Structures are given as C-alpha cells and as structure tokens.
Length: 275
Image: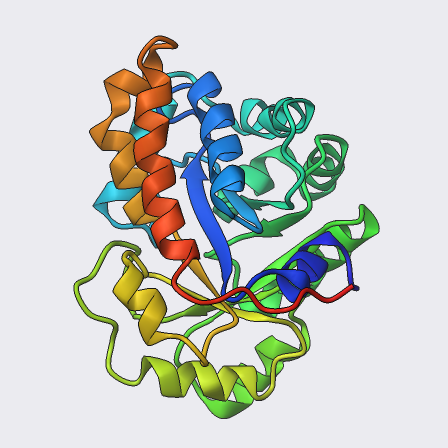
C-alpha cells in the first residue's frame, strides 16, 4: 500500500514530526484544538491515543493522561468520533489511532476497522500486538483502507527483516527499551540500530520512545527519517491542564504546546518536497 500515511512521511520536511496526544485529555475540545495546533506547528502525522486502564508500554506521564481521559468519560467510540470533528475544523494530516489490543478485541476487529475508516482515521498502531498475530489485523485494516503501523525494537536481524517486510505507512523504531517517557540522553547504540532498520525498511523509519527535546532530534539527523514525540507533549498538556479546560485560557496554553512542537520540527532545514 502507499496511502496517506506513507505519502505524508515521504513528502514531509525532514525529519518527519509525529506527535502523540491522548484523546480526551483534558477534554474533547482541548484535544481537537491541540491537534490543530500541532498541525500548525508542522506536524506531518498525528498519533491519537485511546485511553486504557492497563497501558503496559507507557510510562507515568502517558498513564496519568489516560487516567484523566478515562475519568472524563472518554471511550474508544468517543475517541474515534473526535477525528471527523478535527477534519471539520481543518485537520488534513493523517491520523494514526494508538491503542492497546484489548479495546479493539472488545469492540471486534472488523467493527473497529469499519468504525475507524468511517471516522476518517488513516491507520492503527497497537503496541502490544505480537508479530505472529499481526497479519489478521493488517488484513482487516487494509480491507477498509487503513494501514497497520509496525513497531520494531532491538532484536535479531532475521526478526527485524520479518517486521520490516510487513511495514506500512512508517516503521516505528523503539529507540530505547522500557516504557515511554522523557529521557536525558538517547540510549547507546540508537543510531546504529536505526541505520540497521532503515537498511531493510520499505517505508520511512521514525524513532520514538524517549524523544523529548531538540537535542534528541539533532542527534538523530541523518539516521531516522522522523521522530515520534509523546511524553514531552503530554507533559505540557498536564502542566496546563486547567488552562486547557477553559475556552478563555486555552489559547495561551496552546501556545506552550506549539512552542515545544516548533522546537522539535525546525531543528533541520526543509528538504525538497516530493510531488
């Protein structure tokens, strides 16, 4: 497949910037406006997180965001319904739904795929989906015009190649082991691992897990095709939670989110866009 996600990654300024936000954190309107703000700041693809009560791959920052979202009544169906609302307000970048497998299983794979497509999402990323079980999910997503984003962590060369063979949209490189979260330094060997993955990946390769400041983006220049930033953005949202809840104070808080995003987008010169 070569649909909107892969095209966005291939045509984007270097590096591709993929921010993550949690649906419903701190409320629906704030989520919509944050998505639009990130697009304005230069995001090429948006990851929209579905809150889950047992997020094994997430660190405390995103866990707390999920708790705030769930406390506000956010559900999988409500989260999907945010996407067309974002589209109506001008969001035109691809949206990848980030969810653990249990909510998808509970809804039903086919029902979920149909709902995600009807709500104008572009892809799906499931961090706890085993490679051995991914084909049935990929097939269902593809039947509805969605791409399944694959994750690859340090492992054997043969397994990396197997994961890359099924990659769609972009390949999510787990740049550090453990849960998501901000880190002072990138893990030793990160560049070498990214280069190993890129050598066999048919799609752009973006690094995530621990990418939280401009220095990290700078350190990955010439290695990763893009960066995925979650915890750093979610932390800013948490810091200005009360301001984001209220229409009167939301614009100033969104400027804080935008400032962080811009600092991560503009570390390298624009490359010529592919047409």
